[in-house]
Length: 451
Image 1: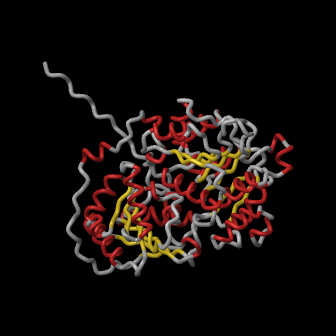
Image 2: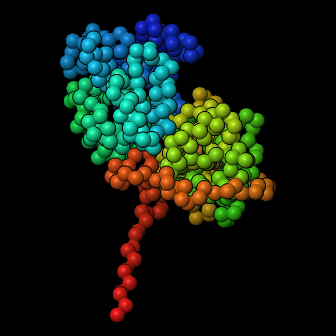
Image 3: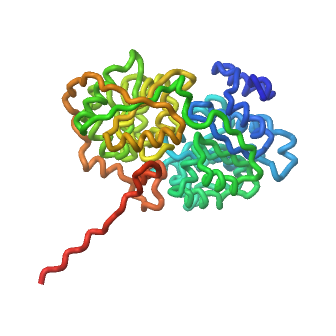
């Protein structure tokens, strides 16, 4: 097991880049996954959020491009890793990284550019911006593509993207990528890839069903499982409040945000998009340093809000689960669940936005008396210690901000057919655990025509 990055015998270029970022010691998941990935093996990796999974698949990708291994170059079964095309031939993407959300795709490419040489070109593709921009960018195809499945399928179907030479495939947040809502898109993308390739799947959570499905897409994968689930209770404290009504929920969120430590940030998660808009407005909006992100906001709006949140101009962010995965934002002191999350995985990934880089953090839920039993059942399954908290004296609410007009909200809705929608916009409403079963839907009978 490597104790330092030097033990991997990386190229001088990559070693210098890691050192310049202050990285000398790999995290446990990096120790477990980097060596087999460099050797050309398929890897099925599981580790808690904030454990360094992104670098665990980017370092092998960059290393194999800078200095391809002789072993993998001579073995056609493991001829994985990006290669630049011979002089005089157009470049074709050699590596593909799949991500479930636009924000995660952008973040992965940002990390990639920190450590990769300039000659190792890259492009992130995702919904929410005009297709023609990606058409233009792909006139000179990059070596590495990072994208969401919906936009990738758009580009593949119109033949603007050729993935027939991809040798290195990564699925980040693979449990969500292989969820039933995304499986058809993933299978269609795999049809455009060569059979002989290296596949790496990374996530914080894997159900037995998803793991079995993932292994059908891989060849004798190395299983690297380190610190699974959420961070330890020493780093992240878990607690919950029980409140009698909606008004108390809002006032409690406002009070908790007012008690943030100096320089600290908080993320507040809601299940539905309309609740995000409503809550952010009740908390005062940007005038009160509260921003909002949902799948209905344009990509430009989402990027502006995230940039302001990272820079500290906005101290609190209200969001749906579109912001629950992969985002690495420093100094998030608290994660607040405005209501009970729909699944245990959602709880795990939301909680992982705090306590990153071995810092302390807290995650709290605001529940009704009816939801308390369901939550306690969930944390027993996740083996998380939690406690019921005494609500503080509640602060009065600020003047509400003007809500986004419904016409503006509808303008941001995707115009593509639902089956081609970007997976980052999808939402899973069925609660798969606890005492509550899936909702039933009754069809409203049509009125008889008057005679």
